[in-house]
Image (cartoon, rainbow, N blue to C red; front, side, top):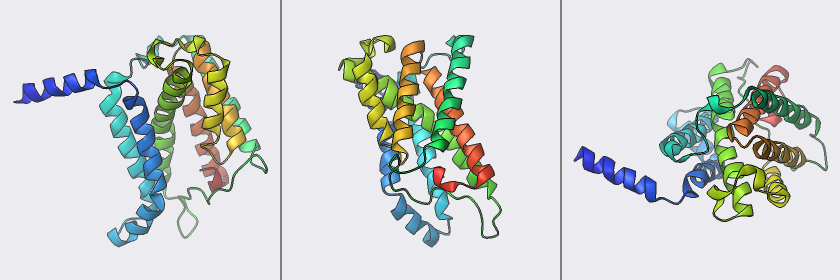
Length: 236
């Protein structure tokens, strides 16, 4: 029975559209974000701090990514990245971080909420919440977003059979359109567009999806450290 079930699962995975593993984690994350206010309102009745809903969102998305991991053929060994591409990815991540925290003004932003504040009533940081938020932003979000925005959408705009598109051949139209849509996913829409161009260019330049994932993770790690140091929770 076990072998039969494994065989059915393998057949299902192999026959699945390559679009779904790259779209489902992103859609799940956005769907959970859309109902976050309802989940936060429900949390106190369950005796749970409402801020733990982020852990649920990131955790479920991470589980779905792990479930589909064998389908991500563009994510071979991270050791395949050349040393120069590592340095370029880190540099791009740093530049995007600097732009992000310096472009927070009208009309380059949309109305946003208060952000994610992990501090307690006495002003001290609840490190369980903070670390969970940081881990989600560094380990889950970059993989989820780069698989959707760069590996899938950028190449799909160039050719509906997107797996046949080499990143370098996606073209400027695909880069521009995907960067604009990526930007408007964020409250800091203009900084988001620039980030979309930077990560997309990095993907096309290196031909390896790990490069924009690393850059994205560097940006989010630096942003998280800066937010925790300065208390600018609206950036979270």
